[in-house]
Amino acid sequence: MRLVLVGFVLWLISSALLVSIVGSILWLSRKFSPLRDAEGSEWARLTAFGLLAPPSFGIAFAIAGLTSAILCPATSVRNYHLCFHLAKHLCGHASATTIWKSHSLLLAALVWLGVTGATTVILSKRAKLVKRFRPSPKLKQAIALAQLPKNLPVWESDDEAPAGLVGVLSPSIFVSRKTVRHLPLSALTIILRHEYAHLARKDHWLRWLLFVIALIFAPIPFAVWLQREWRYACEMAADDFAASDSQLARLLTNALRAVQGLTGLNNEQLQHRIERLKAKRTKSNYAIWVGVGAILSGLVLGVFAFSLPSIWLTFHCLAEALILR
Image (cartoon, rainbow, N blue to C red; front, top):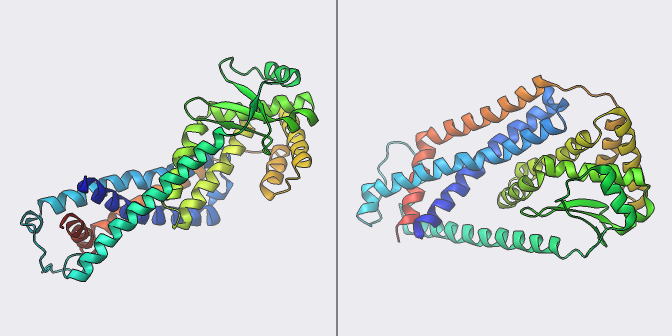
C-alpha cells in the first residue's frame, strides 16, 4: 500500500510539471500563432489532449522513479544515507529535516486526494438531486421533431439551467419547465439537437475525466484554463453539430437569443456563439497541426527536463525518502 501512495505522489509531482510546461506552450501558441483560429471540435480535441497527455506521461515517470528507488542499494538496506552524487541536486534524505519534509509531502498529497475525491462525489450527487418530471406534450413534440434516439431519456426539470446533458453511464437530457413554456417549438427542437450533439461526441465521458484532472491540478492555472477552454469549445462543437446547414444555424441563433432573454444571460461567450453562427467559417487544418506540435514540444521539453541529472537525482532521492520509514 505504501508503494502505491509513493507512486501517487511521484505521479502528482511529475504530472504537475508536465501540465505546467504543456499548458504554458499551448497558451502562448493560442495567443501568438495560427492556433487562435482553431475553434469548435478542433480546439476541443487539442485542449482535451493537452490536459490528458501530461498525466499519462506522468505515470511513466512515476514508475521509473519508483523502480529506481526500489532497486537502489540505499533503499534495500533500509537506512538513510548521505548522497555523494557528482551532480548537485536537492537531496531527499540527506538529513532528518528533509526526510520529515518528504513525509509531509506524502501527507499533503493524501489530503489533497481526499479533498478532490470528496468534491467529485458531492458534485456527482448534486446532479442527481435535480427534480425530474415527465415531458409535457409540447416537449414530446419537440423530441419527435429532433429525431432523438428512443433509448435517450428526456425530462423536464425545475433547474435554473435552460437545458443540459447529465449522467455518464446512463445519460439523459433535461429541459427546464421555464424553457419549455416560453420558447417556441422550433427553438426547443434545435436545443434538443444541441444537447444530443454532446452525447454523440461522447462529451459526457470526457467532461468528468477532465474535471477531475483539472481539480487535482487546480493550483496550476493552466490546468483550469485547459478545462475551461475545453468546455467552451464543446459548446461550439455542439452548435456545429446541431446547425448542419444555414437554416438550422438561423434556428439555433434564434434559440440562443431566446435563451439569453429568458435567463438574463449576457456573457461574452454566449454572444460570441451567436455571432459565430451568423458568420461564415472555414476550417484550418494548419492550426490543428500547430496545436499538436505545441503539445508534443511541451512533452518533449518535459522529458528533457527530467533527463537532466540534477532533476532526475532529486526525483530519485525523493522516492527513496518516501519509501524509507
